[in-house]
Image (cartoon, rainbow, N blue to C red; front, side, top):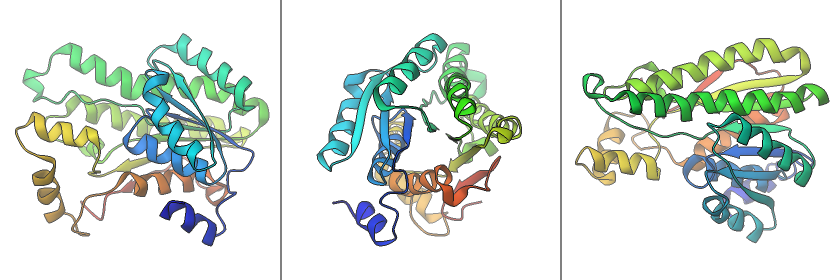
Amino acid sequence: MTEVAAAAEVTGLAGRFAGRVAVVTGAAQGIGAATARRLAEEGAAVAVVDLTAERAAGTVAEITAKGGTARAYGCDVADYDAVEAVFAQVAADLGGVHILVNNAGITRDNLFFKMPKADWDAVLTVNLTSAYNCSHVAQKYMVAQKYGKIVSLSSRSALGNRGQANYAAAKAGIQGLTATLAIELGPFNINVNAVAPGYVATAMTAATAERVGSTAEDQHAEVSARTPLRRVGQPEEIASVVAFLASEDASYVSGQTLYVNGGAR
């Protein structure tokens, strides 16, 4: 049993998502994988979605090895028709759609004057349009059952970050989408929120460090020095906040973006 699972049992959270089906996109690694594991540890049946089912299989294996319920699904979440098809399959396989975590994302960092339009389009499509696609399909199930939780991943970069005009725009868009969906879907008992992580130690941030000629270790030290808690975040710490927003503990929280960044400003 993981420390997170043990903590969940001690605090009475082990069955918090019993009977719920959660769809987590971009769940092959990083924050998505940590979120899928956390929701499963608390009783959800989890659809682990990534670009291919093979990529998602590792997360599913981790969950099932600990007695959880999960299935791997391959889907290009930037393709609306593919999203519609995979949600139908999830509902048939697992018995519904109650929770959606929009986590899929990519980076294509560059200074704005050097940023190719293709990199702008790719980041906006994967990070923002995919959230539209998945939320638009998921809400059909949620409205019909008068219940749902949508949690999308924004970022501290939404406030502006050098070399990330595309990523910042997409993550700011997530916040606007979240606020608007909360207004429109609230009457159907659907909560919609976002989480905006600061720097988190993942494969994506390690790759970013390498692209700028640094190392993950050096970048961690630099970020830690300017973060009040004097360390970088871990995927499991973001997953715990996503789990809170997806739970009934947050039943009167909607339309919010919660920054999880160690106190950084």
